[in-house]
Image (cartoon, rainbow, N blue to C red):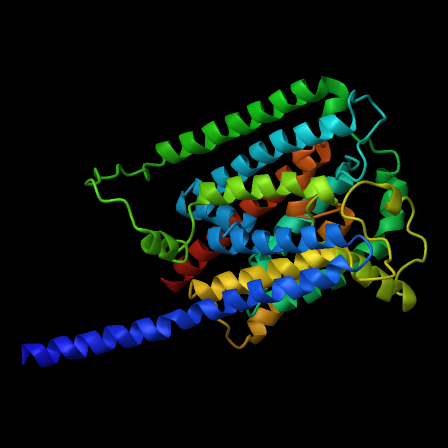
Length: 421
């Protein structure tokens, strides 16, 4: 009896192992397809930059998916569940990226001066329009459940909301283009464009940003400690170091440590400006929507001053084969391969509620990204890392809107509970 049972168990385990290897096929297919795609990109104009963008996109999609690097999710974990790790990972990404970008920008603009901005950096005007854009973007995150970058990588996870949210983002861009000229004349045209290194020097600006990030991290951790949710961890028993197979499998189980995700995002953002424009996930979508909308007469042909400002550029392009478009392709492909390998690819049929909140939230995301000249990746991360005051203002507005959204949701939930009584 024992031998039969043991043989049955062995067969079952063998069957599981035989089927287990199939989950690596999509990841292997993505990596295998990257080679011929890279070879074709190499033949195009600016081929090396396109290949670099593809590799960076694949890596970024892998990191975002495995570490669940999502501004909305991290904010929700802190505001609703008292878990500060995600917010701390965002602060870590900003710190690492700020240090990296300072090194690179220092070789471009040796002596920063007022009125002199480094080329292509996401340094925008600071006005009440920027604050309104951040509030709208944060509201869009609350409604749709993610920011734009997270919706892109969640396409690879089979999210039923992400496709509608990205369509809604396109609609929001149209609304943004239609409202741009009045807002530009009213507030943006005369708004100051503040690059911190031009006023404090590279060392002073970096020291100030790291100090602010350190104070924010200490504040978040102190609140976490006061909440009483920090539980002491039991002492772990000494264990043998994992073998290579166990180490490899651990990369595809659960999620990566949040700090690892923040570190990786910061390094990727700093590396991006070496060969291409700063990271941004709205340039391609915004440019495409602008071309279609202007061709259909839905938005003005002339958008005052828009193409002269720093941020996620939305100028109409003659070709979609751009570094940011290739980066997005790599991001979605890398996220899909990582999601399947980690058994987190869970597609399902969308409901009417999925479609409604995706479109509504996406419209807010799109309007906020268009008028704010970028999203949480472009304006907040890339802008703040480059020393742009606009990035800090946009980020503060986004997180204020998220906090208000969670407060409102809690109030509605409590009110519904009282009515139920």
